[in-house]
Length: 237
Image (cartoon, rainbow, N blue to C red):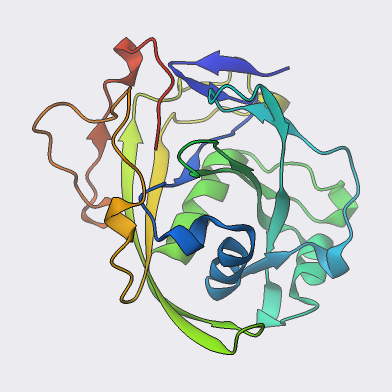
């Protein structure tokens, strides 16, 4: 069961603890482009493309209602291109589910850190926040990737801000009775030389910043306090 939380729709567990902003380079927000980016920061598709379990769904407040995840992405252990996520399936670690938001093309990522196979992939204590932090640490900064289909190399720059006020801290309505701190990491990913990134998403109803507020860097240990608690409209990214 998924329920709206503070003008952003949170899918009963941890959906939206990481968001790839719609202001990122347009290619990042496509299926192929996002996968190339995930591979560049050390993640990949599930082991041999196999998925067990029922797809999870979420309502992102974009008028589409409940939509299923489009991918489950796992950390690539040992930097093994093919089998690295198989190792993660055995040993546990970080993974996330991808939900695109219609209109902005922003990607909402449901992050979590899990136990190994012997523990049936149970979410670790503090696993939702830990999954977010692991993903942010892996993504922040400069990374290089390769598009084998088009034989092109890419350089990605990822900037992070931490937003407070979008999700309620605590464990009310959270799956597995695991508390979250309520912080959301918003990633803006640009491909080197892509001048379209800043124009990719227009500001829209429900701005996440106060008028005149500075946008700090998460690496500076600062946070952005959101006005979303007082908004009755969906938040757009």
